[in-house]
Length: 489
Ligand code: GLY
Ligand code: MN
Ligand code: MN
Image (cartoon, rainbow, N blue to C red):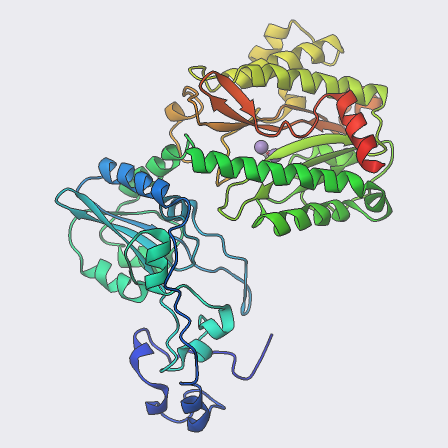
């Protein structure tokens, strides 16, 4: 999309939005006559939306902000949504707002910033954001972020009604932050402009405390979040069914057909995929993050599909199934698959409130090490293997992680609050053991080489144990075969 009116506004300084276009010198906007500029100022309908209801998560975001406020009394807290990132020249990557901002506001609008201003009894929250484009001064059609180019934005008043948070013009925020005094923290890494306005008032160490708090706060999901995670998983189940139905087309083309098929479901029912889909056929399954997805799909081999739909509110599923491409496992494939299944069963059984987070990993590794010793791939006893971590040549990765708005959620949490922590109702984690025999691994019999199996489910910790959110997909080998036969017709 290119046009001679493509906005180029190096001469449009911040704040010049107030200057009407017809008072500008000729040539400031090449190719725009005074008559056209004047014409574009009027003749537009009032589209203000006056009867908006608050978004569903507004009451939850209020509670989350209250918890944040209680943790940092008397301090100004600045949580940016982030800015667009250039892909090339004048095209940008699709925008995804920071999880911290979205968690606290429910909003996903670029360039916005949540500020919690300290008061005598807590904090006053304000969402700073771009207002509707001004039509009087021409910015709506002559500036790159003008609504004529990028689409209608909610007005500040509309956003205030939707989010249940007072709003203000973000173009004034950097100066306000520069002028302000008192302790302040910012979530780093999202908004360079805001960060530089605060550069001489913040430290990396104190800012990190804010990020850590917001990461740990997300560990226990509220009802809204659990509902969203279930929606994400349900769409993901449908996406996996879609893939099974088109495996013959993937065989005729490539792994790309699988990626595209799953993406269609993600885009139609959700916002996006929550991470790059891993569509790994044959030996590609042994590459943990195989996202090139450009390989052959061959009958007789396995397809490891690790994919998740992200909902409109940005919660993602993270599910893996390893499927026989022609619908039937070979004997060796089944033997390896069954070991991973058994490890996953042991892992899921260890997910319960009050249990140690590490327990599910240890339980799964115990099973896998036992099978590897039994098959003669590593010398026992099992205790020795586990102590030295020798099974890891083939198990490769941890058995799971927290799940939420980030696929690897709560990543900034302290070790004692996460991997050394205790499970609580409302936590949601993946349990995803795997066995991977690289194509060039000379330490295993030739027939094992190039086989990779992972089974991954999304497990919610409940009051009395756990709930498998992704049990809409079969896991046992015979059930997988029956399910595939049904879908392939
Ligand atoms: N999809 C990445 C993971 O399973 O952790
Ligand atoms: Mn995972
Ligand atoms: Mn995964």
